[in-house]
Amino acid sequence: MVIHEALRLYPPVAVVSREAFKDMKFGNLDVPKGFNLWIMVLSLHINPDIWGDDAYKFKPERFANGITGSCKFPHVYMPFGVGPRVCLGQNLAIIELKMLIALILSKFTFSLSPHYIHSPTLRLLIEPEHGVNILVKKL
Image (cartoon, rainbow, N blue to C red; front, side, top):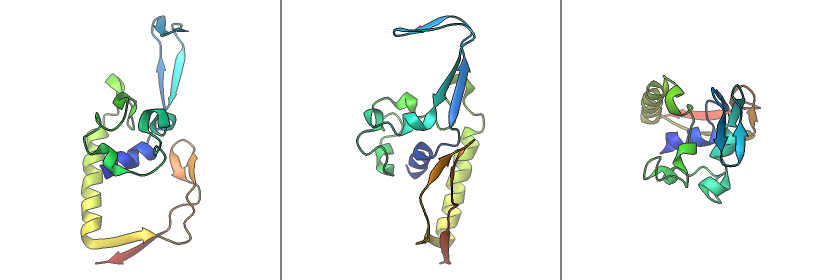
């Protein structure tokens, strides 16, 4: 749940782009062949209409019932892209995250430095503008 919530608020991919290979229609919107559609992943991941009034808060329990039970439209959760072009490394990345978190938590405690300034910045990836200062103590 913690991993999914972290990936929701700080997805590794900021934008997913797709090209229409044929003329398409989405509701009242006509999309011509060759049109490039850019999806801002973060804007979907923090939308209160989809995730609720607490969309900006770190709340891992929202994934207690899995991704399908996490929000109004679970298909908009796409930290590694979506559909047939989803990132091939998604499963490996999740396994590596689980192993890394288990190793860190079994040997260390950590907390944010009092000097930390929360300032996510959208560049190629979402990254902390001023870095992240962490206080680490061995157990």
